[in-house]
Length: 84
Image (cartoon, rainbow, N blue to C red; front, top):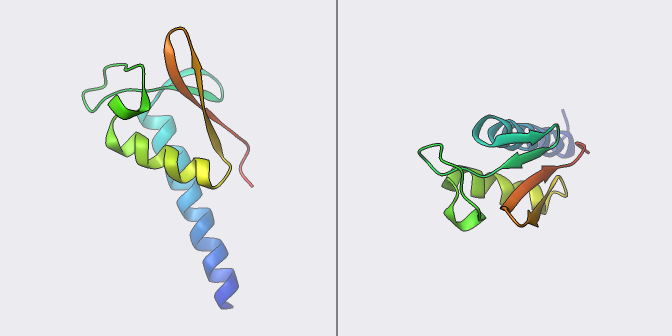
């Protein structure tokens, strides 16, 4: 396996891990929309109040173009995008 292939595989694995973290820690609102929760599992309205693992996953996914933060009158949620 070439270096570039190893790096691509590592990014793919990291993307999948962060997507799964968001899906298992967040509250599913729609098929691709997840509400934010704190470390106790209680829903929170903003990313800065969310479980640090969710915040880290969102930051990774946003940098990779796989998630965006959306807001409404109830607060913020994370919309997941199709994997690259």
